Amino acid sequence: MSVSSPSGPAFPGNFLWGTATAAYQVEGAAAAGGRTPSIWDTFSHTPGLVTNGDTGDVACDHYHRLEEDLDMLAELGVGAYRFSISWSRVLPNGGTQLNPKGVDFYSALVDGLRGRGIAPVATLYHWDLPQELEDAGGWPHRDTAERFAEYAGRLGGALGDRVHTWITLNEPWCSAYLGYGSGVHAPARTEPAAALAAVHHLNLGHGLAVRALRASVDPAARVGVTLNLHHVRGVSDADTDAVRRIDALANRAFLGPMLAGAYPPDLIEDTASVTDWSFVRDGDTAAAQAPLDLLGVNYYNPVLVRQWDGASPRSTADGHADGAASPWIAAGDVEFVRQPGPYTQMGWNIDETGLTELLLRLHRDYPGLPMMITENGAAFDDVVDADGRIRDEARIDYLRRHLGAVAEAVGGGADVRGYFVWSLMDNFEWAHGYGKTFGIVHVDRETMRRTWKESAHWYRGVVAANALPATG
Ligand code: IFM
Image (cartoon, rainbow, N blue to C red):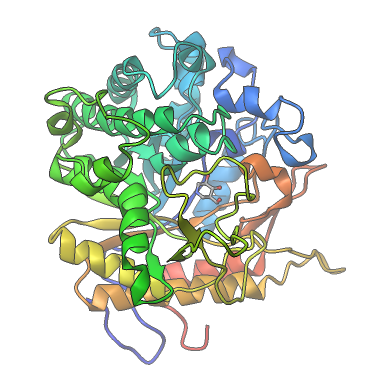
C-alpha cells in the first residue's frame, strides 16, 4: 500500500528501483567476441532508414566500459538493472552453439551487478533477431518461436543460477507491427498478414521460452514478459468501437494468449480480411499461456482515437505518414488524434493519468498479477550548460508525475513491485538514431564520457528514500 507521508508518496517495502537499457542500444562492439549481425545491424546499415545514418556499431561502448557503468549503477543506489542479451552475441550466425566470449560478457555483467548488490533483470529479446533467422523467415515463420525457446533454455543454463528476473520479450507489439507492418523498425517489412503471424509466433515463443527457463533456472528466479500496453481513449462515446479495435490489436492480442490462453474473438474477426489465422495450430494458445511471476509494463503516453469519417484529412498522430504502411492492421478507419501537450522530444504527450488507469485496469482484469514498470521515461532536448551541468527539469517533472501515478495505482490495489527508468543513459533510439535522448545520464558522442543529469541526482534521492520528495 502506498502511504501518505510528510514528503511525497512512499512506495511499498521491497519495491525494486532500477534503470533499463537494451543490448543494441548501448553495447556497441558489434563485431567483437564473435558477435554476428542482427536485423538491427542490417537495418541501421541500410541507407536512409535511420536518422543521420546512425548505427549501433559503437552505441555507448558499454561492452568496453562495463566496470565504469556498473560503478555508476552502484552510485545511483538502484536495487536492480534491466539489460537485454544480444542473441547473436551468445549464439552467433543464428546457430545453436553457445559462444563462450559472448556468455562471458553477460556473466561478467551479472556477477558485477550481484557483487554490487544489484539484482540482474535480463531481457532475452529486445528486438535484435539474428539476421540468419530473419533470412529463414523471421517471426512470421513458426520455427523462430522454437529457436527462441532453445535460446532461452541455453541462456537459462548459462546464467540461470544468478539472474534475479527473466523477461522473455520486450514489447512484442513493436517487433510485430513496426517490424513487419509499418516497416519503420527492423526488418523493415510491410506485410500485414506477416505482422499478425509475427504476433502469434512471438506469443508462442514467449510461452515456450517460459517453460525452457523454468526448466533451466534457479526456481527462485522470477519469469515474466514486458508489454508496451496502450492506454486507449476515445474522443467521444461514438468512438467506443475504435477504442475496442485498437485495444484488441495493441493489448489483447498479447494479453489474451499469454495470460488467458486464447485470442480475443473480436481480433480474429476484425482482421479477417488480412488473414484467416491458420498459422495458429491446435495447442498453440495453451502453449503461449504459461504462469508468470510478473507482467512488465512499459508506459510512455496514452493514445486517443476516433472513428475516421473517411472524408476529412486524416490525422497522423500515431506517427505514420498518411499513405504509408500502418502498424494498425485492418484498422484503416480508426484515426489517431493528437493530444494536448506538453510533449516530449519524441512528440509524445505527457499524461501520467493513463498509467494509473492502465495499472488499475490490469489489476481488475488479472487480479493478483504482480506487475513491474519495466520502462518509463522521456526524451528531451538536453542542454549541457557552460558549467557542465545538465538541468533537465522537464525530465524530473515527467518522472515525478509518473511515479506519483504508480503510487496512486498501488493505493488503488495494483500490485506493482518495481519501477525502471528508461533509460540509464542516452543511447541509440532505433530509427531516430542518437538525436533522441532518454538517459538520466548524458553520453558525449565523441568521448563517450558519462555525465549525470540533474534527473540522475534526483532519482538517486528517490531510490534512497523509497519515496518522492514533497516538492519534487
Ligand atoms: O528506446 C525504446 C526502448 O528500446 C523500448 N521502449 C521504448 C523506448 C523509447 O522509445
